[in-house]
Image (cartoon, rainbow, N blue to C red):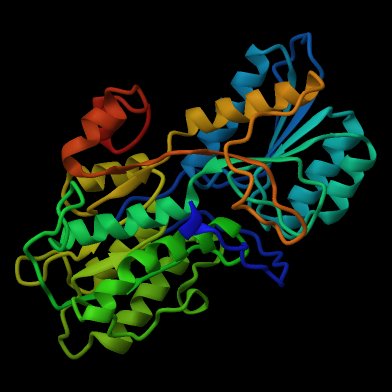
Length: 388
C-alpha cells in the first residue's frame, strides 16, 4: 500500500446538523427516518460485560444492518449490548456515548458522525480504561482510539473510478484497456468532509481518473475537481440531487452531453439519478450517464439490475461486524486484536492499528454471484428493490 499512504485530511469544523430522511422521488427512496432511539439490549442475562455500540443513523440501510449485525455477534458471544443510533446529530451521539460510559460499558464500538467531535467522550473512556474501536469511520485528533476496523477505503475509491471507466468502455471489466477513446464528459462527487473515509474514497478515485483526464479521454465541464467543491454534506440524498442540478444548470444547459458521474454512495446516486431524470436523461435521445455508487443498498441494486445505475461497491458488512466483535473480545480478554495495517490510518495524533477488509464491484451481471449466492439478499429482494 505504499502508493496509498497519506495522512488523513484533518477536518477543522464540527457541524451539528440533523439529517432529514433521504428524499428524492423517482430514483428510489431511503429507509425510515432515524429517530435516534435506544434499541436497548436483548434483555437476557449475559455472561460477558456491557458493550456500547454507537451508529450514526438509521436513514441508510447499511448502518441499520451494521448495527444489527454487531449487536447479534456480540450477544452470541455472551455480551450485553447497548446499541444506539444517533440520527446523524452530533450532540445526540455524544450524549449517547456519555450514557454508555455511565452505564458501565467495558468497550465501545463507534461509527462516528463527525470524526473530530468526540474528544471528551474518548477521554472519559480512556480515564475509565474502556477500549474504543472505531467502526468504518476513523475517529480523528485523539490518542484515545485503540483500534480501527474498516474496508480498504482508498481501494474503494479506485474501484468506483474503475467501474466508471468500465461503463464508459475505456476499460474492460477485467481491468484491461477497452476500445473507447472518448472524449467523455464526466462529473465527480464526494462524501461528507467530516467523514474521514470520504477523503480516502475521493483520493483513490481521482488518482485512478487523473491519467485519463490528463490525456483528454475524460473532461469535467463544470471544472469541479476538488473535494471541497463536490462534497455532499452528511452524504444526504437531497444534497446530492441539488449538487447535480446545479452542475447541470451551469455546465450542460447548452446541450453538452454528460457521459458519466462518479457518485460516492448509493443514496447520493439515487439523488443524482433523480436530478438527471428531471432534466430528461434516461430517454432514447438522452441516455442516462454511467453512474457509480457504494454500499450495495437494495434500492440501488435494483436500479443496477434495471440498467439505470451502472455499478456499486459491495462492502460485506457482515464481515466488518464480525471483525468488530473479534476486536472487542480481544480487548476484554486482556489481549490486543490482530491488525493487518499499522501504517495507513494516521488520525492526526497517532497511527491507529487497523484491520482492513476487501470490497467488490457490483455490475448487473454479477449481482447474483456477489449478493444473492452469498446470502446478502434474496433474488426476490433484488427484484422488489427492498428487503423483506
